[in-house]
Image (cartoon, rainbow, N blue to C red; front, side):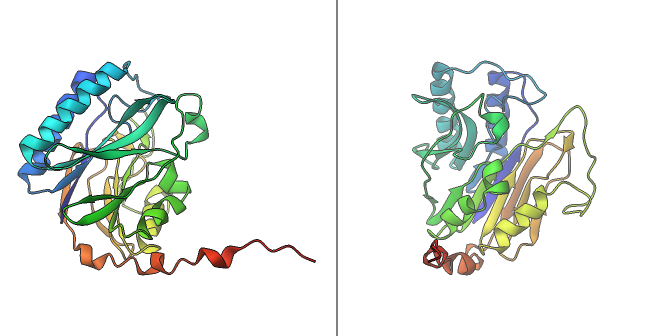
Length: 267
């Protein structure tokens, strides 16, 4: 399967974000990708950080969904769109999945919020397995996969060959200037990516904004925990790679035995 991870710069408007999404969908499709994933809440942007995020309401949401559905259909590519989701419960962080005909396959919400996000968003409470082209995959959003590895294992034990990981780490104002992927001196994020692939025996596809000072690269990690490919730090672009989904055996995930973790009460 050929997968793509789109890493755009922060957009200053909903229209600007949609234009970047359109261009990256077209590029990914033109390079042969069957599915493309965007970063966490890219439309209209993740709130609470050091950049301005424009207003976004339910009407804009519906218009954006219609646009992205049309681009997926026109380009013949599945899309995992990181966006805000205006639900009856409130404003959520989510990823919406479209197949290559533009049909929505469902919405994965962020269910484990970072403490700093709780004043701005409400958490979801459901997880879903998706399937495109006969390949099952899951989605774990940022903090979920970095600090709650069970969110990735949930998908792996249900047959996911890939877990897509839309995330947001870094800044355009200041931060580390990374030069080596997985460096011991760098923030821990890329080491966590390696663990999520290795401990489950699956591909872990992690996509970040193209911040000037990234704390983690847009990266594909393989089932042995190896870095298959990553984009250069701080550069906007689309990472496209063919992966051997048969190599994602999920062996270690399949050996998970929750019945061995029963609480015991001392007599």
